[in-house]
Image (cartoon, rainbow, N blue to C red; front, side, top):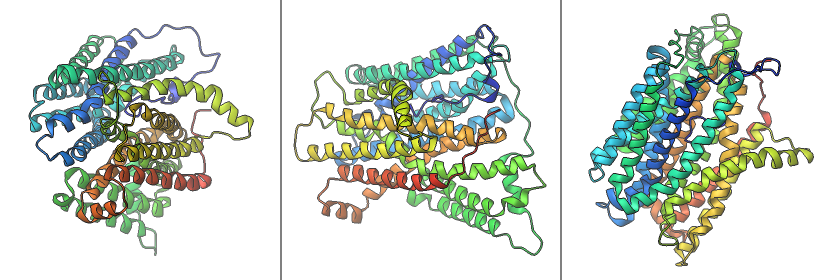
Length: 531
């Protein structure tokens, strides 16, 4: 699952071991508390997330004309996802600099519970409900980078070989929780109403918090780290401000231009909207700063160790890879919005809710990972094709494009008035989930292998930001389709708006896959695993 904080995350060097080191040692007694906490938290998150779009379209947004509800529901959903993957920056910063991991997880989880309470209490009040979504995004996103690292803190040299078992258990329980949440919560929404349907995930999150608190005396607590004088931001600042005798500072000029563009975008928030304006401003800042730093990075040598300078160069290259992956997230996260809305138009049994189709995703993930490792990848190697990380990621983006071509074909049949069975969505779900397995897990493996140890935290933050920007493209596309000129042009193609957007995103991902393949051919692979 892309929303998981532990999607097949590679183990840090401290948890790796050799066969001679792997001596029998007990599992830390506090681990069951963390696993139980994660199971409840993931059920609560996916339980509310997977019913959010149908609830918005059928209940909270009824004040809008019927033709506008679907796009409005998508906007709210993808704005929420943007927040979930933006706030890890805040949570990681608070824990690393001030509180440590345990207090940050505990207090942000309280915010998380308060958000669920708002959803259940204000299911008929837009401001209260949106406040709840904001609090959940802050709480869920804030703890996202912390829990995985907190698990690693519980191991020492005597039992570090057992960490892999724990991470496997996390991954299993995440998909277990997601599967049953996807199956059950749409039924509760339909039969028991939104207050109960959103209240149950809140109860599960409160249980998660209580279980986590109960283990407080058993946990290993690692103190916040002092500021790193050779961190990514400090190396970037040195490179941009450093002067070379008789030479201008073109990198600084580019970075300043990016900052000015960011300010201009912030000033235009009334036209774009707050979320779009802030995300575009962040993108302009990253683009200008990244290009500027690349132009002057060598000037940081001497002021910082070569390892830190080379690490920043690696991060800049990895950022290009992440940028090319953002279209994948545009497609992937719409399975909980666009595809659910499409399913509402399809023929299905009376007992089945269209949002339950999302249960296919975690189920297929658990089937496809062993299939790839035991069958598909060995078969490719027999034919002389090595499934490298970059090849897998490029193939995953291309598979997402195929999934959306299939979804677009289904939409054409719906628009033609045919009674299309919802079982037809199995094909696009299967293609998209195979793409997820190739992109999500592999992306973390790739990023971990490419970044020096001191830059791995920054890489993880940028990986999560790629999901934020992927959902930004959805908001921009939806805003574009509302433009009168664009709407008239789409009508001239003979396609409905939904079908047009589906084929547009398929083309978007196909172009990204092509660009990814071209860049991957020239990418200089690194290996920063411990020898």
